[in-house]
Image 1 (tube, rainbow, N blue to C red):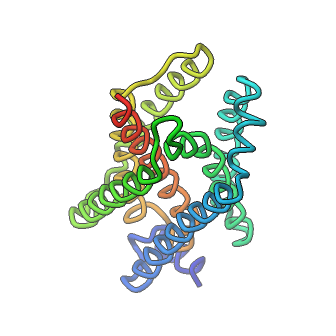
Image 2: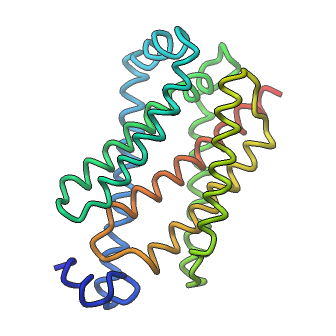
Image 3: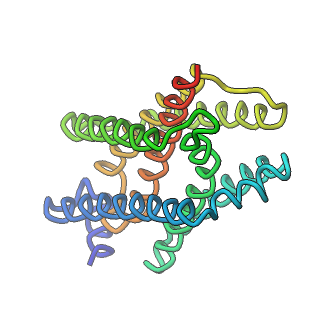
Length: 241
């Protein structure tokens, strides 16, 4: 049914009937919620069973090049997950893409969560919860603002992607040469993540087809995860300054 609607209304939920557009938006945010719950659940299992600590010791602390390998895996895997999630051939393939991306985020978050929750490194179990609440508030505020405005923010795409490549270069350089990216960089990354949330939400309103809820939820999840990552870093760095 959704494929037929896409053909009739120009492959855009914005041109579809109100009921079809509302159903698409509902599916998108339900899938986003599912991805977030899966992420939190997997992380909880890894930390409660001490698997997270073992992975960090055996992989990240054992070999400095593992950090660069993780970056390469995350970037390549992220592109692969996005490709799968946008497949129009099989809904199963789309879900594989979303699941893959959730797992990639689980791995990329392990070191930060371990440090931020460990009193030995000046962390606290409260930090991820506090950062999560702030992330939810920022995401909710931006989402409401975009939906209320009804504007198309697709023009932000090139600016955001240019900022992303610049940030990626800085992160790789920091890992390779061993210098730290401080609060100013984290603040800039929070702004970048907020920009992506605005951009993604606008695309949900104006660009995605009614059957592309999995791809839309993956993009939103990626932006929310980026926002959470750097808000958590700000909380941790501020606590230890």
